[in-house]
Structure formats: structure tokens, C-alpha cells
Image 1 (tube, rainbow, N blue to C red):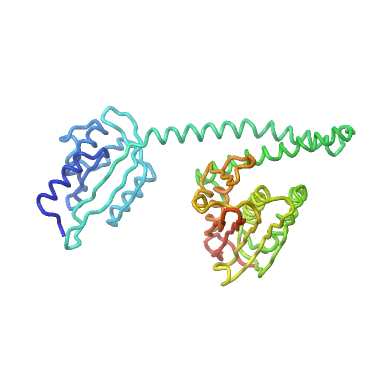
Image 2: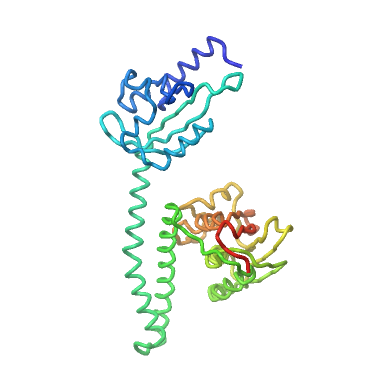
Length: 369
């Protein structure tokens, strides 16, 4: 039901007062032209009203019309649907601005499409900041990776005695240096992986793989770390199966979860790594990592899988890292079309889990064995 005359005037005043640029277009006229623009849109673009009305919104793209998001907008409008996206637009003076654009259809009482409303938000500052951060991380990671790898190779040569025989104190120092070097390489790799994920260049190498073998691989790799803390790693196989996955990446996810469990668990405790398959797991397979650590406050669990987030509920000791580990885990699991989550209570331990569905071989150009 349409609002009364007074209500319509109030709505119009609200649109006129809005700080976001707002336009209305008429899809029933050829080329879906703009029929109204509010003052904020005029201020944002630098065009006058008589230079705006009657034109299609594409005039803001100038000659920059090969953007992928523009095609997505076109298809959405053809379907009479809504979309929120970011595109490059240009002001009257030629200045570039990044426009976070939300387009929504407007239907009348008979469900006829009568207008599209477009809400513009200038996010140039945000986009430029994100690009500077991305460039900074790229420079740091690439500039560090080569020398750190060289240092690591030199330390390995010292450790195995192929260069010279070390004294007991010297061997201990080399071992410490190797441990820190390995951690630094891991941090650099996290940054590079995150950049690939953001750019959509992170590719999975999918193949049929025994789910239980992932646990065996992780336990073998991480047991030396657990032993130092006198933490027992316990494998529990409720049921197992072979499933299409990227075994290296899934091992990376499980390793990250187990490593975190070790960090936040008291000495002389047990961490259980479980595997369940089929209907009881609610998916094809489900891995769980159950610790007896400090737990996580309920209000913080939804922050865990966000980038650059680190929580230490106990605040008893610092935890080094980029804050990207769980965000990368989430991205890898979701690339497998799976889910990841956590169940935890403060001072009662945590259960981190992720589940993977049965992937369709045809979707990934694979043939079953």
C-alpha cells in the first residue's frame, strides 16, 4: 500500500537530506534513464541536474566500461533483481572514485516494475587504504621470503653436520634458530596465501584421498611440538571414507587447528582429533579437534575466523602470529564447499570442527577411481 500524501513528502525530504547519492531510473523508458537525482548525488559527481536526468547511469563510467562488475549489474537489472557491488566511476572533472553501488527494483501494487533505485557510496578512501595495505604485505612477504629461505637452508646444513661439527651449546642454538626460522616462513606463507585468496588465485589440487590419512599426517608432523608440552595427541576414528579433497590444504587446516589447540592447552593434557563420516556427521566427513584449554567466551567466537583477529581469553601469555590462520582455514574449507566452526565455553575447553561434502567429480573435471 502506498503512503499518504504527507508521508510521501516526508519520504522525499528524507531522500533529499540523505548523505548517500540516490537516483531513480525508469526501466519502462528506452535505456533505463535517470529520472531523479538527490543533492548528494549532484555533490558526489559534480554534474548538474540537467546533465544527469535523461542519461543512463553508465555515463559515470566514462570510457572505463570493461569492468566485470558492470556486466553483473546489467544482468541483475535485466532480471529485475538487487545487487550491491563496487565499480569505478568518474566525476565531471575526470576524477576517479570507487562507488559502492546498491541497485534495487521498485514494484507497484500490481507487482509491475516501475523504477530502479540506486544508492551510491564513495568508498575511494577505503579502497586506497586496502590497496596500500595489500601492497605493503606483498612487499614485506616477497622481500623476506628469499633471504629467510636462504637462512633456513644454511641452518639446516649446520644442523646436519655437513658444514662443520657443532658443540652441544652450538647445536642447541641452531635448533632454536631453525624453529624461529620455520615460524617466520609460516607467517610469510600465510600472508601470500591470504593475498591469493583475496585475488581469487588460490587453486585447489583435488583428488580422491583417505580422510583418516590426513590425521596421521598431521599427528606425525606436529607430535614433536606436543611432546615439548607433554601434550598427548589422541586419534579417534568413528568412521572413515575416501573423499575428493586437496589433501595438502586440508592437512594445513587440521594442522592449524591442532597447533592452536596446543598453544592454548595446559601442559600434561590430551587433545583429541576425531573423524566421522556419513549421516551422523551431517556431511560426507567431519573433523574435530577437542582440547582441554582455556576456552573462548561466547561473545568472541564469531570473531575467530575473521582476518587479523587474535584472541587470548586468559591474557596470560602472548600468542605470536599474523591473525590470518583461522581466516585462511575458513577460506580453504569453503573452497571445498564445506563449513567450519567452534563450540567453546570459557575455562571448559574448545572443539574446533570442519566438515566437507561429497564433491562432484564433473565439477572439477575428475574421474572416480
